[in-house]
Amino acid sequence: MAFKYSSVTKKIIMALAGLFLISFLIVHLSINLLLLFDGSGDSFNIAAHFMATNPVIQVMQLVLFGGFILHILVGIILQTQNWLARPTRYKVEGFSHTSFFSKFMIHTGAVILAFLVIHLFDFFFKAKFGELHEVMIDDTLMEDMGVLVIEKFKDFPYVLMYVVWLLFLGFHLDHAFHSALQSLGLNHSKYTPLAFGLSRALAILIAGGFILIPVVIYITQ
Amino acid sequence: MNHWSSKGEDPVAFDHDCREGICGACSMYINGHPHGPDKAVTTCQLHMRKFKDGETIVIEPWRARPFPVLKDLIVDRTAFDKIIQAGGYISVNTGGIPDANAIPVPKVNADLSMDAAACIGCGACVAACKNASAMLFVSAKVSQFALLPQGRAEAAERVQAMVAEMDKQGFGNCTNTGACEAECPKEISISNIARMNREFLSARVCAPKIKEQTGGGI
Image 1 (cartoon, each protein chain N blue to C red):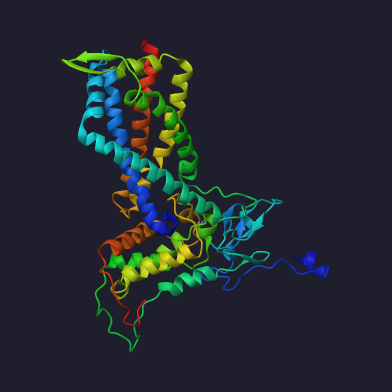
Image 2 (cartoon, each protein chain N blue to C red):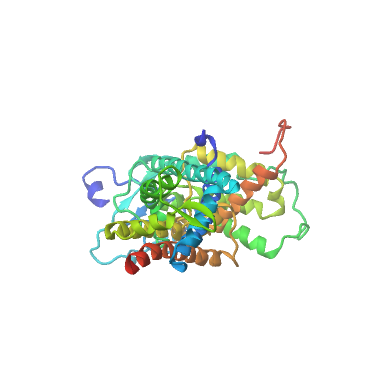
C-alpha cells in the first residue's frame, strides 16, 4: 500500500512520525533524568508509575508504537526504492560536502532498532509483564523501576553497550529535526540556519542526556 | 580518443552541444563529481588545469535507473522530458506582447523564480544524489512557475502531476542530504525542494477535489 503513496507523501509521513518520536524522546529523557536528581529513585518511580497507569498515556503508548512502526516501515520502503533507483554504482563514489550523518540514516536507524528490541525486553516488558520488586511511595504500591535501572547499569559491558547505542541515536538525530522541517516544506532563509543548529543541539542534548544516566550510575555506584 | 580512432575503432561517445554551460548535454561523472571537481560549472566549462599533471581521471556516465546508458558516456534523459510534459509549462494562449508591468511581481519572487529557472536539466542532481532522486530538478521547475502569478493558476495540479511522473519514472526519494545542491552546476537551492513539498502538501490538503476534466490545462 505504502508504495502507492507519492515520494513526497512518504517523506511527510516520515517527518511527522520522526518529530513525534523526538517529542517522545524528550519526555523519556526528562523522566530518566529524575534518577540523577533524586538518588532515592522515588521521583523516577512516581513518574514511571504515572506513565504506566495514566489512561491518556496508555492511549499515547499505542500511538507511540504506531509512530515507531510507521517510521521504520516507511523508512525501509523509501530506502528500498532508493537502492533500486541506482542499480549500478559508480566506480568512484561521490563525496559531496554535505552533512555526513545524512548519508547513513538507514544504517544508524538499523542499529537503533536492534538495540531498541534489547532495550524493550530489558525494561519495558519487564515493567509491563515481568515481576518487579514493589515499593511503597506516598501510600501507593508501585514497581521499583529505579532499582531495576540502577542494577542494570552496574555492569560495565552493559553501560558500554548503551553508550554506543545512544551515540548512534545522536548520529541519527543530527539529521532529524531540520530534515523533517525540510520534508514538511518548512524552509525559510531566516529560520532554516536556526533549524540546523537546533537539530544538532537536540542530537547532543538528547543523546548526551541519555548517556549521562548509565555513566553517572556506573561511576557513583 | 585518438588512440581508438587511429585503430579504426569508435571513439568514446559523449553528449555535447552548446559548449557554454547552458544546455546541460555534457553530463559526465568525473572523479566522483557530476561535471567534475570544479564548482558551479558544466563539463564543457571545466578546464584541464583543474587536474594535476599525470592525474588519473575517471569518467563515468550518470548512474540511475531512469537514465539508461545508450553508449559509453551518453545516457537517455527522456525521463526528464516526461516530467516536463506532465506539467512543466503554463497552458495559456500567448497572444500579443503584454504591457510591461501589467502584472505586478514582487522583486524577491522574480529573483527566486529566475534562480530556479537557471536549471538546465542536466541531471547532475540525480547523479550526485545517493538515492538518484530528481527532486532538485522537479522542484526547480515547479518553483519557477509557482513563484509567478502566471504560473500560480495551475500550481496545485502541476506539482501533483510532476511528482507523480517523477515517481513513475523510478527516481529515488529525497533524504535532504544536500548533495544535489552542492554539485549543481547552476547552484539551484534545495529551498526549492521545500517549496515543492509545501506546494504538494497544500495542493493535497487544500485544493478542491476536481470531479471532471473540462479539457485543456494540466
